[in-house]
Image 1 (cartoon, rainbow, N blue to C red):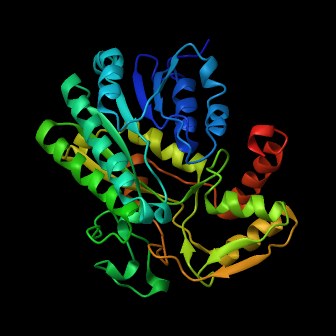
Image 2 (image 1 turned 180 degrees about the horizontal axis):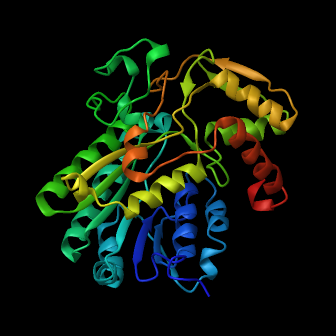
Length: 353
């Protein structure tokens, strides 16, 4: 039998929105492992194959402490009905809402800005109101490094060699895509609820997460799949853009630490943390790393730089290290082989091919 130390959340309940997705399903599994009762909401939309999401939750769906609600977070009536069931439990057991559901991606947001506003902002407002109405005191928000915009817009414009990453105190008032704007607005909205209603909120700015279960439209997954299939990949820009890619295990560590963290210990009901590796790699070098892991060469179709894309992301994680004990341990040189191993194994599962 697990000891109390092994199950720190044995007396707690959590709601994970987007619980069938890439990050959400990992959070669900981790919370169940630590003894929690977990409720998940996901609409299984067609942004990518819903069968992949079902596979993500294969283990959780068999667990007695897990319940899945298939619903769209934009549907206020559906959310109200779900909270009639789980709201009192989340309140009584001092649980939290871990809000990971969102419309993601910079490029799709350019053509569907209304959808991004409805999903990432309006639905967040619905959840914040329900939390307030049911006395749920803890809210974890998945935000994004996209809120920082271009590095040139930051208040500290050090030379690249001296640049130590975006800091939580940097200006985020100049996003350059509807997706980034929607995430910044969600943060601002929850800041208001934290200060008006005492909704203790932690916003986590994720830096380009990858790993097993990653969405198939994201660069690492897409590049890996196409290179493996001897098909050309499209690369936007000249390959010099740098990204701070963060392995899922490290992101998961940060999320769990944030769930246990009390923002009030810093004198405010609202806190923001960067979660990244604090290391960057160029897109060109990333492709080389994938080629090495697969033992295959890429066929590259170079494309003009895409609107809304930034040239650099890099997380300064000093604050997360200090207050969350966040210690990422999977640099890209280790993470890519782990991802490609998972990808190659997944090809034996028809729904993942």
